[in-house]
Image 1: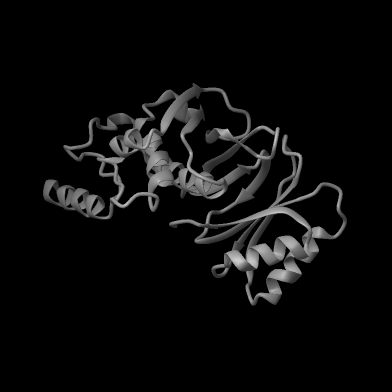
Image 2: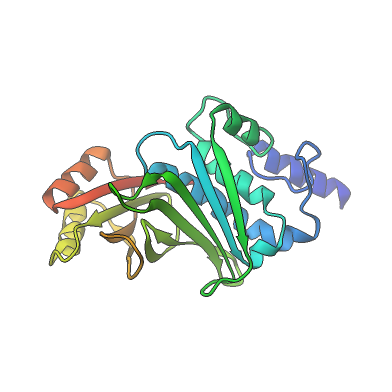
Length: 247
């Protein structure tokens, strides 16, 4: 069994994923593993998501851990957020061994908060970019995620200050519409159909502090920047962002 565990650790490390017992990772999860490991994918996804929703580099992130996860050692989750935010942004491959050093080199700082009490979810991770407002003069951009069910399925549960329910997929689109514009979401669906793309999931932000209506879509294939710009213009949207996630 020890040999099998070693092989599993090596396989994870070669993929750039977290190997819980790797000797070159500065800590071990120990008893926290069962609670923390299902959220590693969520944390990395949130780091990637928030960097794709903003213009320009991010120099500061705030990570809030709420619910059961806040009672545990969350350092690996912070590293996962950093890895998601930096992967593809630097020449070097980003992994759980070098991610802290790469973040420091790029001047990316992180602040963590822990709150064991949470109302709607067993565990919740919220990642905020304090210097990146959702809109001029608006609140800072934040995204949140958790896991659902016994199989720990990742979920995006908040984006642009609005509550949503989306399973992260490879090709996603997030659009913001001006409030109180009738028929706008219907026009979005029609236009995406004209691009020859199918919509696998759709979620409309139902509550929150954002001043714009938010729609998140999981697409069956990639959408181009040119198509997003055309969609924003034709549907008279505030903005639109295409997102690629590793799933």
